[in-house]
Length: 588
Image (cartoon, rainbow, N blue to C red; front, side):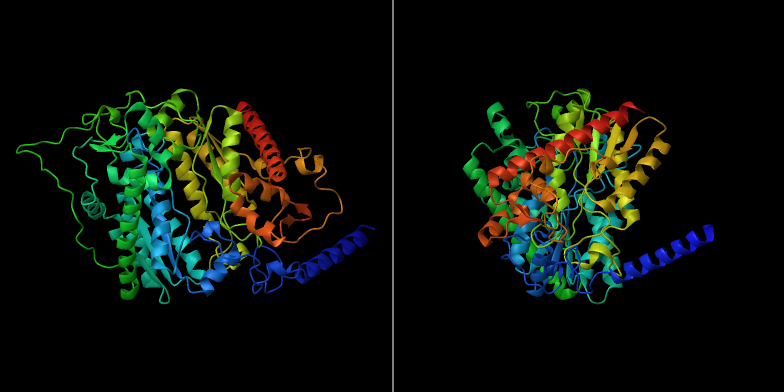
């Protein structure tokens, strides 16, 4: 009898393997699904919606990226920013705000370019023991090898999709050598692609001189990690990033003698700054493409500097130095100086100043959430940054339920399949993948940076299946290394709801048994969750206009109704996750 059962089992296993072979995806499949299951998953299906007015890959569907490549947009810009201290008024994500405005403008100036997601995490100093910017709360640093591995994987992913010119620009000084190294290595390795680092983008001297001729000139030096040009460049993307309203109300809208009170004048000057930097950088990008790689450094304009007096000796670093400057030069660079502005409501570290993060830690917000998303194909309606939109909505909800937590920047780039040869989601245009070892290195550096600042519990959540094992691996390794000084927690239940969890759409009768499946990498729940962050991320307006605003039989055309469902979905998921986090922390 046992032999009979074994033989039957072997037959069933063989049959299952054969069926699995037959169920392999159609060779024309793209978009995150099977061409045999839906025409929207076929490589050559025309885009059902008009091309969007964006140059950001994460704001495009896989079809949008495919069509952009086919139309000749084969230059891609990889920009690198940072999360660091910038005085008392500027958010730690300063350089990322600048790049949101500038990469967009540069790509449009070029006319044939797209922007990859900003690499928000860069080398900011040694992590342990902390040095340079890492001595200030809120800074998140990457080791040089981690940074260069990430740049390499992003560039490699984009090359595999057919981009022919891959340009690196960086908004911070510490980013330049890594980009230069990677560009040189890849350009030597690849004969069919031009890879270049554009150091002239970082020529702040030229833009400072240009703006002085347009009426923006600092007459003083406040001794802060801040200046009028970068403040207004940030203002172009988001006035809150420089605390504009709070500073005006407090009478502190000045930097280096330049008055930033006039909002209209600020916008005019900010636009001039962005336009100058776009035109300036685009010219050097064209030169690099024609020359086939990074060009020798050009002489950069220098701001007027007064040298130290004769016999000057540099003082020893003051242990109170924080904020990106010297305590002796300005009290706002001193570790214990009170925050000159009221507390902020945001729970995102990159939207806070270093003083905001310091004060939040002092108030007991000692849990940090590291969330991981992805850039991948999601059918014809959802943008490639799907998971990042979901996390931008859900992470602060979870932090609010916890009451003692902040959110690190979403890690937008994760493993999405083999880069070369292409497997998994990497077979679809627009996908950006990290190797598993790169992903785990980035997670490790993020967590160690946060622990260095005094966060006691580091929580990992991921919105995609391919992210889960890496987070689990890193959490285990960190707990073994830290020995209890801080604790890492992988919360897999954020992604896979435990049995018995609420299903909002079924509770409301919106989803019932027997409803159709569109067989695409999309669902009503994730579509609705994305809509809370940005309805454009699901192409809501265009779909309603085309009569295509359904997914798996659920109609999302009534915006008010859809957002009501969405709010309940996000709230249920966030409350569940926060409860599990509290149980996990309390049980250790």
